[in-house]
Amino acid sequence: MPWWLWILAGLALVVIEMATPGGFFALFFAIAALVIGVLVRLGWAGPDWVQWLVFSLLSILGLAVFRRPLMRALKLGGPGRVVDAMAGESAVVLEDVPAEGVGKAEMRGSAWSARSSARTPLAKGQRCRVEKVDGLTLWLRPE
Image (tube, rainbow, N blue to C red; front, side, top):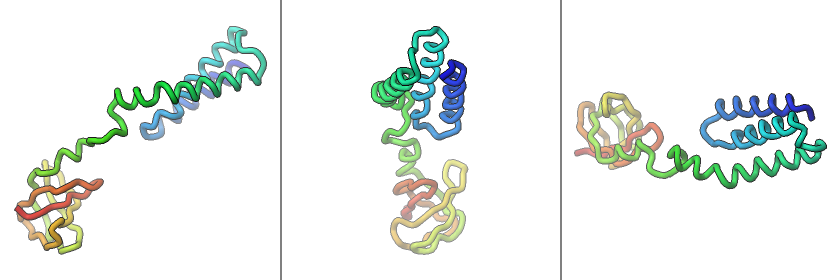
């Protein structure tokens, strides 16, 4: 395969990595393709089957060795999301929340979807404590 195709494939994989949310999978394939492109350009890559073999090995080795430390260093995908720290904080109900229903509550100056964790209705203006955060929904209990 010509060297410029490897470089083009590597750049396309970099774009794919940037367009997808933080998994760092395509990044290692991109790096491997760019390395193979440089090796082909220098005449050190050999026939096509060797290029594909080295590309595969570099990609898998990069994923196996570097992905987890990279994720850990950037604090991605691990436990302890920032929203989990909101449990125990105070929120004010913006609209009536029926038992087993969904309403709105304000916390930190932002409106959130809210559910009652006590399975009792919450009245507008009532101050509540956040039990847990599930996505963009606050589970509230009356204070």
